[in-house]
Image 1 (spheres, rainbow, N blue to C red):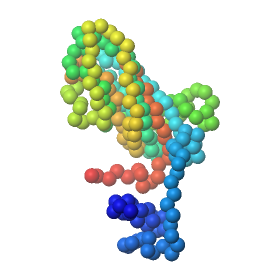
Image 2 (image 1 turned 180 degrees about the vertical axis):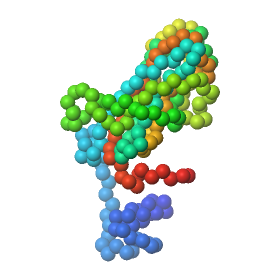
Image 3 (image 1 turned 90 degrees about the vertical axis):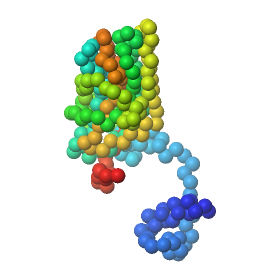
Image 4 (image 1 turned 180 degrees about the horizontal axis):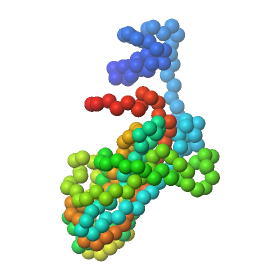
Length: 224
């Protein structure tokens, strides 16, 4: 067994049996056999048994001419007691022309701002609810946030967008975001630029993820 694998095995044995000290495997009287789960442990139908509610939620900000950019701020409010995970985000809009949207244009996600969210979501598991809106603790609040410089160095996710001479349909989806929000934390979802738009236009952002009750140990913020 490689040193790294052996080290991880030792840590798991200590955790399972509550052991301390050096070689944990020598402290266990009977041999411990490792096992491998061949099935997907994140099957959607098994999330309910783990207390996870899978949801989808959208917002429609506006980029206002010569004034400001809009942002969809996704918040997990203080006191929620929940852990929220965003797995997927989808932007969609009619991409404005380069003349109407000058400058360096981009999509980004960053930990900027906080508000009081609208928490009406659509749960993706009909065992929890019938069709229609259902409450979750986390949600969007629309903000007018002004102009930006480059967001690339300070973003959780960033991609440049290149408007052309004509307005065209535009859809951008990103998976495996794995963004974890504890209470009193948030992320801004942006379609923005370093230059104000000439004309006003709207865009759509939709996120998918899951939410569950947080363990007290998970709700502590530890400085790096």
